[in-house]
Image (cartoon, rainbow, N blue to C red; front, top):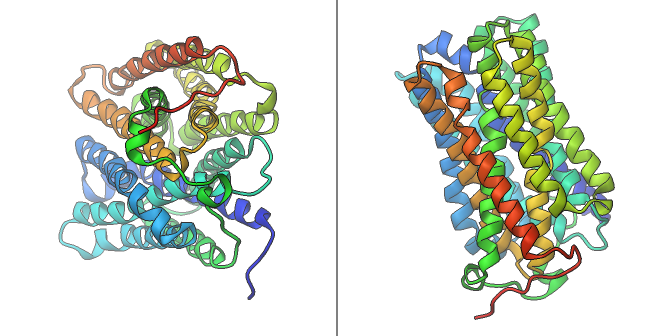
Length: 404
């Protein structure tokens, strides 16, 4: 098969890659109850898996800026998919072959998380570097994460309606085929770098001297925390705190959350050029805050679940909006800027669900007490977005980074 020339194939592969990242991150939480039933794993141990997922991604984010430009976007994309494939296979095999099932889950989580971390860092600059790209493609790219999550939830619900919960490993094997096939496709799509399109990128040192870079990192940190605190625990919340069946809980909880988050990002991707993102982000923050308050305060199960689902709409624009703002305002940020943004985002993705889990174990209110800690990140997001709005009220103004 010859190399393809049309960059639409590159964009499509990146979109599938974003969906694969959703598989690696969102599939294990949907299996938390199965892990508990099969291996007698505690909530603290489940929380540690969530923490490990994002800590590994943090390590990849921190190191990637130095090696991705050297080995190239294509090699990074292929390697990332290989790690996710191997990680999913190990997740399904090792718990049944090692003396400690939990160690097997840890090893599988590490491999999958390395792949997801590499995907996160490489696909955004890959899409940003596509020649003559249309406005909104970054949000369309990240909407595929939501629809990937949606796909995972839907297939999981159908699978567990047909098959026993203890046969979860075969579901994992089925999902492993997707990164294998997309990784092979990355051998043939055209790839170009940001350096080729925009000239030499800023060094990490220069980026760290850009004061507003820290605000963008804090913004995406809070976005990641708000998103993943709900995303990682909503399935467990529906089953354990609201006493719903897995099928009902997953359809009304994570499925609706992912659907609304995906639709929000799709709308932003299609019509984002008409939206003043700096005005929208504070509104999203307030909306997210309200959703968390209703979710934890309501004594009516269906009201709490509706609030969880609406939280998906509230957080939908937060992550891609932060990336869009940073990319527009730091023109030569390059791969280093996307790596720093990914680092900030994954710090939030680590802190949000991890704090929720640990507080849940210590709180007399259970997971409702844990989810209430996400209010801190909602408030920080609102404050940061308002600071950025006041810093530059002109949507077309360019914030110049401080040079060396």
